[in-house]
Image (cartoon, rainbow, N blue to C red; front, top):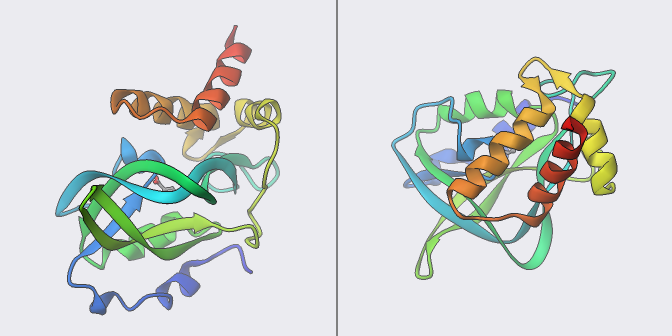
Length: 188
Ligand code: BEZ
């Protein structure tokens, strides 16, 4: 698989078939949105968990020293909180470009409550993409993130902002908070 997933993503879903188009964000989209949207709702997806297992060569790191950003991994029974955005289909040109470093769009059930859900799209960096870094210890993940900086800023700020947003929504995430704690220990 190439580094640039834009052309693959364009062909993955026929966006004309959706009555409403929703995209689910589980990372920085929870607190920072750089596109127009029709509606935003707190939401969750099931059977996935956030992990800092995707390499970032273009936003929070460089080709020579990649940072680590989030992807989703299958996790039976888990619930992943996030933000869902109802958007027009042209937003995907922007998101496909922003997430071109290995993420593919997947169709997923987005839940707004126990009895309200809708089909939507989510970006996932799967293990077969070239930017995938995979599992590592919390200490190793934190060490890499602490020293990584890219065009979008310091990798550690990506973690701190996300952890803060999850706390503000009262939505703890064990993995995110463990990496945040390990990073904060380096600050001392
Ligand atoms: C996000 O939720 O911010 C996000 C994470 C990975 C890919 C695209 C969006």
